[in-house]
Image (cartoon, rainbow, N blue to C red; front, top):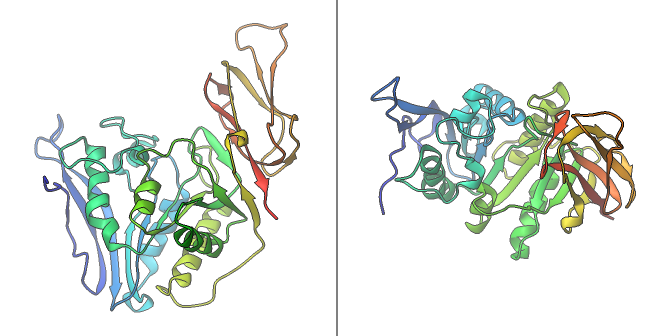
Length: 330
């Protein structure tokens, strides 16, 4: 198997606090012997569990980068039992361009796994995590939000898995994160996902959707920081008491949770995030964007529950996700 060209500039397995990069050679017009430099912090103290912590899997999602930058800056080696591998800008090229996908190869890192050591820049990053970093980890926390095109109620999520022992471990970690909402998440496009790579390797995964619109808020950043600390305490990597607040448990049992647009137009949201909705209720309208005097097209919820996600920009295209309804559990 071809070796991956990425190399860490710091040790991955030595006690202490180490700040550096994952260095990926990348020859380009403005730098013949250039490299993609992915910021990396490794904090290790003795033996214990390893947490692999990632933000900006998509480059326009910011709560994870904020929480992970603070963790890397403030955490001392003596605070840790085990190891933290902190990568705040997972898809660094996308993060630097403030885009969902990489401007280098248009790669969506969260659909690039298991990757290829001889592939595109995005595929090489995926391959390095698949073959080098993920095998080191016991738990992975991968932060997401809606980016520029979606907005979410702030939730932590875990997936329904065939391995129920692993599913229970993921659910326990999700509950430890303790976001305002906790979702048993149904993925509509799981092929190539980092989540899938983590779970197929038998590692505990916590993921999130903490907001959206291509920015972050004081509230969503605080949720990310608290949840991250809770998970690390849950696994014994940090010490202290978890901060636990009420959470709403939601499920996404089938495709009826999703509403998709069948046309282009001016988007009018009819219910706000967190609002209860009933099956058949209008959750959004799409108005013509090129003429007046015509009725909008109504988009209705296909099940009852809570509006947990909505399209964010003011214009919408055919095939875009209009809304997502979470079913209240228990």
